[in-house]
Image 1 (tube, chains in turn red, cyan):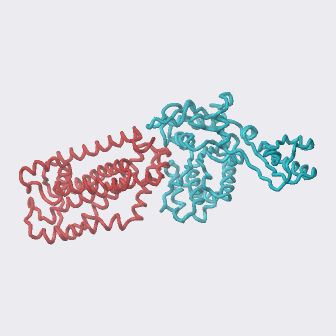
Image 2 (spheres, chains in turn cyan, purple):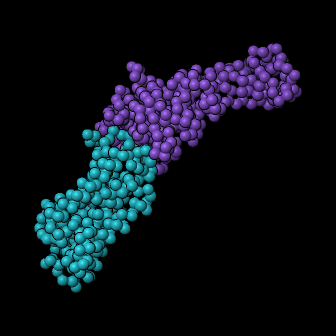
Image 3 (cartoon, each protein chain N blue to C red):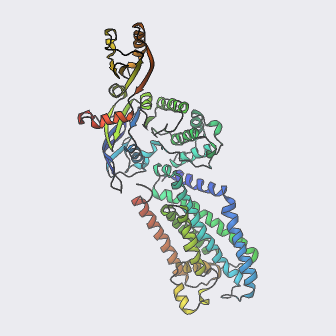
Length: 253
Length: 315
């Protein structure tokens, strides 16, 4: 295995992140703080507890997931899209790197950034609400799993996209709405019964529910279903990437 | 594969999804330590051939071995031996020169070697710019950064795709000197070019590719003898009825109703004969108002090669 090659890509991607630290780190933290101020302090104070958890604390897992989903997609897709856009992808393709090594380098770096962002939002949240995490180890593992899965999807989007607009399409127009409708800010029990059934078709519900279980010991669906769903996404993403490299889709002619 | 060959291509064919056959039955051997120039017009298949060898384009059929390693089954070993400088200036704009070269070395799985990076940057006159962001460099310097990146992992074969396209004369000379130096360091160099002058200056052997076929591979000297035609035209003050016997050695012809005295010669040999010819013309009292020289363009050569009988191809 070309470990030095993987490290070169990983290090390069992390350096790129450091160069745009303001955009990468401060913007999501500021946005999250605004969510806490609006939903936690201003509106949350007038709302009753959800499943025995104060509303401000209830939205913390959803907020972390929202950021992790969108940042994983954005970072990983940009990471692989930009070398294609600028032409420097030639170097990656002509280096003695296997497809798996290329994926580990790019996806690993994007996932690292998301995990760090998730933890920073967690710390930011702890300034506004009292957090009592029931399953901290599971929470950490779930954060890693979700970051990897969505970074993998981001990598696929980065290869698929042919312009910057397409790059923004999934994080902005697919994942953000699905997250808002997927129980980031409410429990789906709060929806009318018909809408609860509709909500169960939204895959993001299972992901947020699993993460919330790690925090408060209960979710919209069982943790086993959430884990199964997350694992399914990860395996699906891996098979997709394998197909991309096998066929050379958008990478090789 | 002979003992001396570092790259062997057999029966290589590439058909793009569009149905275009970019490479057709390419057979080629590159000898260790040589400078090989691949000539061809736009769209001939030069870049596709290089990209296929380097792993960027997948071949439809055929085999490529690099240093004895199959480029697909043993791609790691094969690619480690290859350095690629593409035609376009693809660089990471915000990276420093030193970092981008070190990054390239890392991609090829080699441990960091500040000493080697320093040597490469010094050889390419980039050491003073090592901490500069690439976007701040001139086009010529970016070209050299790309060569430095390709040399970062100490390859045995360096592919230069149109290294001097759009480059000024001084830098072109500079690049030629660097390529000669690389050869002295034991690196085999394969370059593509539009310029026959470039092939003439640098190459040991020349290959000509057209419409995906390699139509000729020959030692440079032999190619220049057969293809490098030059023409000297003297515009005479008064027309001549016939060519004086004293000028018979030069096989001259009269054109434009005796107004132009024309000398056609091989670029490799005839250049030295021009001063003698002009002296003799002067001694004979023939006066001319203007003179100019021209050489057969690459386009002329391609027309000649494409229409030439098959037995000319020695690939």
